[in-house]
Image (tube, rainbow, N blue to C red; front, side, top):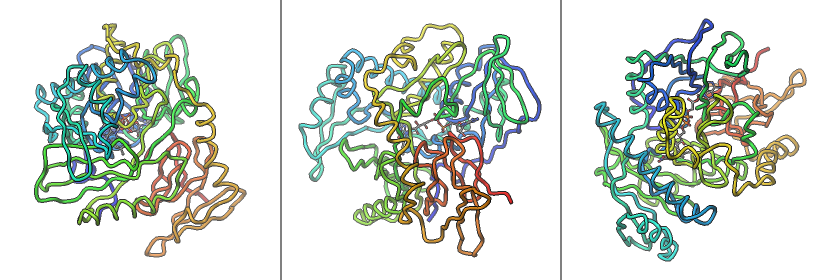
Length: 477
Ligand SMILES: Cc1cc2nc3c(=O)[nH]c(=O)nc-3n(C[C@H](O)[C@H](O)[C@H](O)COP(=O)(O)OP(=O)(O)OC[C@H]3O[C@@H](n4cnc5c(N)ncnc54)[C@H](O)[C@@H]3O)c2cc1C
């Protein structure tokens, strides 16, 4: 069994250079995930000098661990937005997602991108028919024709003209197109400071500086605390995913609207796969990854299936269910908080931000503005969420959270964690997240060190693989 995402297997290993000297550009894009690449793509004909910097490898972050559905049927988003804001807001969001699907479909068609795009029917399902009524009614008011279905004890409503694809193949293809247009990509180059000087941004790390007129922060979770204070505005949700070989693929994707979440889709490559997700939880409420992977395997056993791939992933959830996309402050743009619907929203973000940079009117600028007055902000929840795991872990070090082969020490006053692998090799790391100093948990399935507060992830030897941390935790004598 492979303990990493299906999307990371059998893909081209394309390396980009590390930035080794100071440079100038018009637009600096920080982060080479779906958001960063999509923004670069939409700016490719702008005559602006565009640079994309990625702290790891392009397209290997959260976007490479998604389920890869491209759909506007997203849980009960339209009922939720109607409750939080108004039906008008829900309708605007609906149009934005329909537009995003068109953007992706047109790009794939016009650029002839081979990324396994497949048209499917998307379903949401529930054991209680009445729980689907409001979402169905709203969609019908928006002009969508709904399909109804009953399977075993589940009721479902479905919509047509939605898709699934291979996210990493899509990102790699967009990158190639951008490179042909002169956009520069740098990998293993992180940005850990941004400051202004003479009306320009100076961004960089200990080794290099990039001077830019405009900066787009497409780093999933903004690594800087100010000015956005994202730990106070969002929570994180983690899920456990598997891919299993199946004889036949079906032309639908589905997600239930109650917990425990089950989300599924099919994928056809050399083999046919069912991709199946469950166990979603708020990052700070549960810490035992092994338990969740075991639960996922139990689900699959019930379906008489054996996973070939197992992985986990987390996304950023906003309280008002709308992403933050747009201008944060003068010439600094941000795109985050996709609430697990980032395939449409990251592509939309690319279009909105590039339109803003090129002074083109975009109808969704206000809807997603990061500076909008938040309707539903729960400060106690976010503060508690950010601090709870830190306190629990530091004060009560609950040994049940860790695998058997992990133990802890203090060396030179620093907290150290040691994992002993099957060959008795010791992997030693600092057990404190460089981001906001939370203690890290060991994920015994994927063999990573994961931060329960804000989602940073590190490999066995302490190299950061997912932010917001910009620094490794590798122990050095
Ligand atoms: C379990 C799960 C399933 C999902 N399924 C779906 C789905 O079916 N459909 C859907 O629409 N959405 C889905 N999503 C949501 C979607 O995957 C994400 O919202 C989206 O991929 C986020 O894209 P991104 O570009 O913002 O982030 P990323 O892909 O993580 O890209 C950010 C990049 O920035 C880099 N970076 C970070 N900090 C720095 C720095 N300081 N300097 C330089 N580079 C930096 C990172 O290394 C990374 O490569 C799912 C999410 C989860 C958790």
